[in-house]
Image (tube, rainbow, N blue to C red; front, side):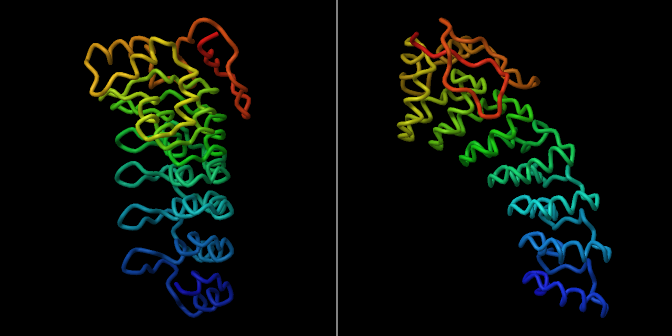
Length: 284
């Protein structure tokens, strides 16, 4: 274990040659392969895999080697595990997967390998409560990773059962560059969470000045007045706002909501060249 943790390939080989068990684990479930993957020692990982290490063996808490190296941003180890047939779709009890591990920490290169080489579907990876890989990466402000997910058709307007969206996650956390990317990719700022808040109200309450200013450009005067009402909002108010956005199609991908009148060119397009219709700014 110590040899793998320090990346001492020669020592690992000697220990294995003298009968060390390649699949033996510590009390907490860590195996030589997991330790190698955590620290990015792909040469040690390859050696133990060649000697029979289980590429998909999980700890008691559900963490697998490919989740571990994805979380820590080691694409060489991700590729290696894919080559050895690791189960890329394995999840922990709550639905957490390797793709979500990479996106949570902004490791776009690992996410690309998991999607392009591992054939993982972007929107199929989510927590049991509906929190998606895109929401995770937006909450943590990882724009390059968000750009990549959107380029692979992540649904920018997917909502949890409670109404959370990726835009709300970015707005509440104050990531204005990510919020701008989402809006340019078709995110609907009028979506209302089940308990009343919108992306604008979440940003305002947290004092996210830049995000608040950005979101206000995408709302009509009437919508701004409605958003300024104190919470909790009445059922009628929530229904009015929901009626304005009218769409949150959780089964389709991409945009999927009515653009605001009157037409006006939105801000600069996404760097990923998205074809999703952009939202017109208000006022004209």
